Amino acid sequence: MRGTDGNEPSLLARPDRNGAPAHASVDPRQALRWGARQHDRWLERWIRSTEDLARLQYSHRMLDAVIDEIDGRQIRVGDQWLTDYASCNYLGLDLDQEIIEAVPEYLRRWGTHPSWSRLLGSPILYEQIEDKLTALLGCEDTLLLPTITHIHMSVIPVLAGGGTVFLDSRAHKTIYDGCALAQARGAAVQRFAHESLDHLEALLRDSSWRRPGMICIDGVNSMTGNAPDLAAFAALAREYDVILYVDDAHGFGVIGERSPDEPCDYGIRGNSIVRHAAESYENVVLVGGFSKAYSSLLAFIACPTALKQVLKTAAPPYLYSGPSPVASLATVLEGLQVNDLRGDQLRSKLHHLTHRVLDRLRELGLQTPNHSGFPIIEVPLADPDSVDEVGSMLFDRGIYVTMAVYPLVPRDEVGFRLQLTAANTDEQVDHLCVVLGEVAERFKLQRAAGE
Ligand SMILES: Cc1ncc(COP(=O)(O)O)c(C=O)c1O
Image (cartoon, rainbow, N blue to C red):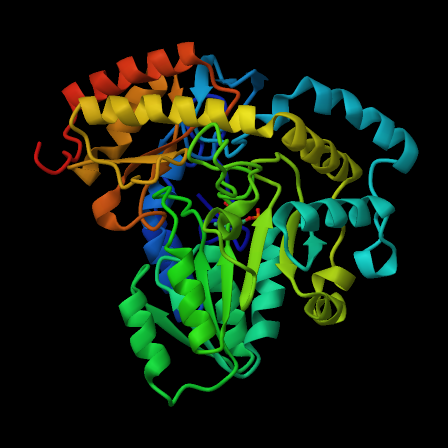
């Protein structure tokens, strides 16, 4: 295969969706040599670390798949109908009739797209969302930007300044990228072992680091489904007077404040990890998004009003990036209303379905990193080389998952990730439980301790 310069593989080439992948012969090592020839060590390292992903991209039907049609939580890829366990639509609001029917009225009033950057003109819908969100989170203020990636890339460098970022080694890639930019602008970055409060404290105790300081961590982890000990991290942040910056992309909408009346241990209202841990926002900056539980393109930062005002000019996307489409602002506003009225019911169903899958894994004696009960369940393989075949079997049996290959997970956790949503049904989970048994019979999966 020739690339655009006539000699090299195009890194942008995609497989042909009809029949065998047109570029199945693309060899990630070829791309690696291309990267190396650019004398770009960063690119070389990155391409090498994504080699497994690149190989599967060209060989596997569950990576880079084109979805032809959906019917509830069923999706069609080519001729195959599958149940989707790979989307992050945790509350199932993407399929909620009440929300779908409300959108056209917003489009009639606002057109399809605002097309002002926020600093140049913010439709009042933004203010309405910020007010409701601030009340829901119980924080001082919130600022909306299109995506969490925009927020990490723009806000982390501002908060880090010329100081020090203490970064959880397993933080999301988009946090890493925000930290890399902060580093390029003069901040120092020190990594600590995943969720290790001891390691973090040892770094904080060393008085040689430059202030200001910030700690960057994930809330509910996108692969393990577990949450960090937020209260302990917040306590350290306060003790050493640094900011705790938390990305709760997967917790917002799913977990919330605890209540004696809660229908399940996800808590109520879905107001994210800070409230779930009964913490205050002192020294804490919370980042979250609507693109998962609320099925809408929008993200937020919960912070003091004074910081919000600074970010309006200091964080480039507020001035330089295009806005979220009106349909997304509409689905957020309507979604917040649905959350008020029946969010806890949806979370209760999500909890029920998730626990059915976790119970089934337990019954099969299988290991999963998930010990939280939140709706992200990774199933690691004993033999990582079988990931392709396991994925093929799941696909043939009508189960659509995320292939959890390196670097999405560490090499000893390679496997597949299941995500439940409130729009899945008990019948779908019945079938999933049967297929999990078949997979466990045919392949070596990691066994739970004591099995
Ligand atoms: C933990 C985490 N942070 C950030 C993102 C990126 O979010 P966005 O699409 O809003 O940029 C994701 C997306 O999957 C995520 O899982």
